[in-house]
Image 1 (cartoon, helix red, strand yellow):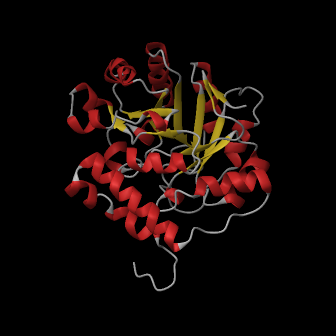
Image 2 (cartoon, rainbow, N blue to C red):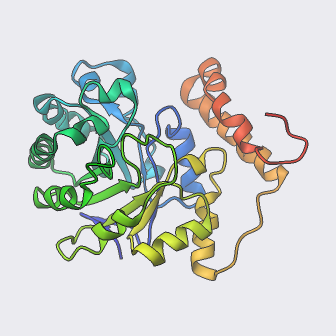
Length: 299
């Protein structure tokens, strides 16, 4: 049984990754219905929360049926980030997750997200202060390191565990790689098999189907996997992986009728959540993904 604080996630949980402009409540509900064991909000700027920015506050909202759910935050200022803990706790999520992995330039240039990988002592200090301020379990999502010359995740994992995080998710690329090339799970396996580590370790990066999930489970021993881009337009990936892990058999691909039905349900949830204009517009990033790879479908 994998546990994060008081949260029981079963054996080898499948997590939906936080994805900006993707993992909003309508999409999260769909993934939950398809078997995701835990999910996270889109990452939320702590500067925005402190300023009561409407966009940031809106991201704190979720449906009860999404639980267990973590609110993911990013920032660089220790006082601002710890000051947001009470705001987050009032939203009543199940945990707080700190984003130390976003590689996007506009985040990194502010020394947030993966930008903090250049200053591990500050990363550890920031994490420690948030843990001390929080009544909820605190987890971290990060990368192997800043670049190939600083793949320091084994040391980082130990230091983050020492200041009290309840779980760690590792994306198998450096910040320098962004999302290019293949994810390297070797160091993720080293972290999991480190005798000093006793918190759950989740792997992330290139988990695009049942076979890959099983490989990561058996080869690297991770406690679970986090699935991101492969779920866009294909929320069925969670049930497909779970079925394969339990039976050794692969489910048939969703039919065109099922794709249409789920896409329509997604659109309806999006409109209900955001209003007709915004709900329709923001679904554009999903439409083609629901039908990608089918014959006679143009993208």
